Image 1 (tube, rainbow, N blue to C red):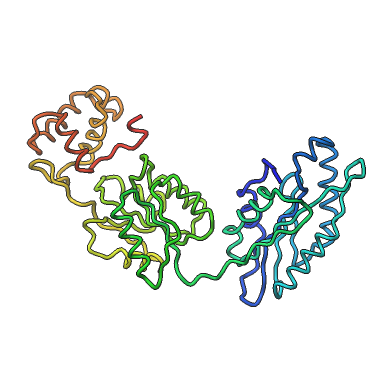
Image 2: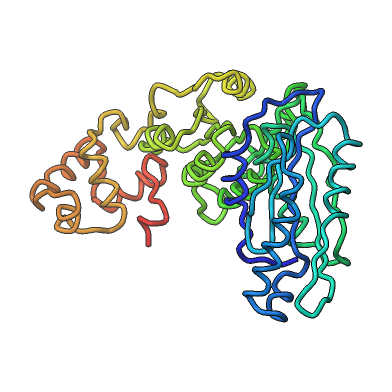
Length: 370
């Protein structure tokens, strides 16, 4: 069943609006999508107006089942959504769904039967959003004969924390995987190289915690990925793990809502301890970025103004271009660069830029380099 209007966002909006019943182990809650099979083909055959009339008839028939236990709402063209509450067991859920499905009878203007399929997902109350995509895929990807009910297995109530590792370097990734597998508290959900792919895996509903590198495969930025994930799935905990001492990472991580921050090579606290404290609700951040030695200078000796000039210098910009971007005169830019050369003992601005980049103190992102 293909429907371009069908979106997970609309499903989530419905669930956020309607889910008001606390989860109970003794009760069954579920999400059901019920819709016209091969909606696009039906619409092309009888036209939009007649198909809309079919959708309205479907809604009228479903409304007979609305109750405190069954909340029904139109979801998209040809599709309705139902939230089931306070059901006692699988048998009651199955009987209700079978009854609804068998009662639906639709015909097109030529009196040809129009089949309807249902997709049922049993889910914990707070798992509505997590398992929404299962129901959507069930209707979108079903290529068999229509007029049937698709049941998904109920999700197991997890005891272990499921962790996704986002790390492009082989050795650190293997170490993280080993730590997770050796722990009785955690289990590995996914291990991927590219931060841009993390959102998709987070949306599958079986990730509780993410260990997120910042600079990942193909230049994908872990902080940008963290921001997207936190906005869509705020309950997922994220720990940024990096070996890069980039001066803006700590502040940026806090801005996007990252829960904790851990430096791979200098933090004395084991990562499993950081994971435990983060899952317990703490936010763990180091006080400072790691110190970097540049020539005869410590990175702690550079002022914020010097660091902002360094960032522009690394792009190959002239003093005039740097000054224009930072609202400084070219003479002021030249003065600060001269000071940094004196501090470090480097002979030229090119050497300064190269050494800073090699150290990881400043890492241009993709937009800086474009």
